[in-house]
Length: 111
Length: 114
Image (tube, rainbow over all chains, first blue to last red; front, side, top):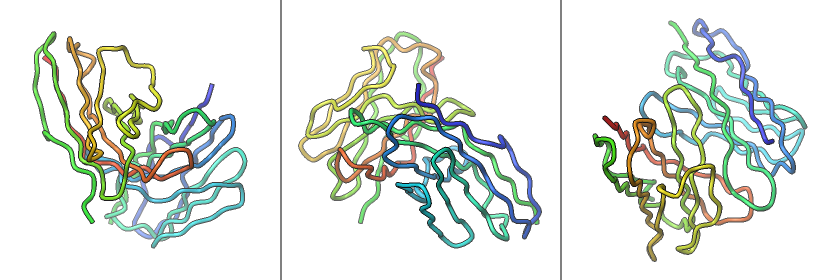
């Protein structure tokens, strides 16, 4: 069964303290891996799509990387406004476009 | 360019009632997917609509149904509401089907079933 696991569940960082969030996946036929940011009570905001192992994408303080088994979201010198839940999702197989989500990592950045 | 919009923002219903949620897709997008997100969980796929036809369904009972209109907007209908249906309902639109097209989410509708 296709599965996505995110770790840690929660992460507290001091402003400027860089870290990484992990998303490991077990799927048949990965078509894409997606990262989203979600603020409380709001819809997920699209960040990145990664398609193949070795691919990297960057946006401001965020950098996403992909291997054959996992993806990392690296946060460099975070600011309090980076506080949110970060969701990872995969799209797999040929019969459906559904996204399979992990449960997210809740990030808090303190000044 | 207009993003994905959903209505209403919040809704309170009682057990056994029926509810209709609405979604307008992002400009240029022809595919709409619906997700249910319980508190502290990741979104769970309900179904997807493409060219007014259902194009994939998750593990949800038939009392969850939907429609897509010629302008690509969509409705999610839930009959015989149960307490466990309380959740944030998310609509996402994408450019097309078949490739790994990014899905862009709306702000969600918070449904509370009492």
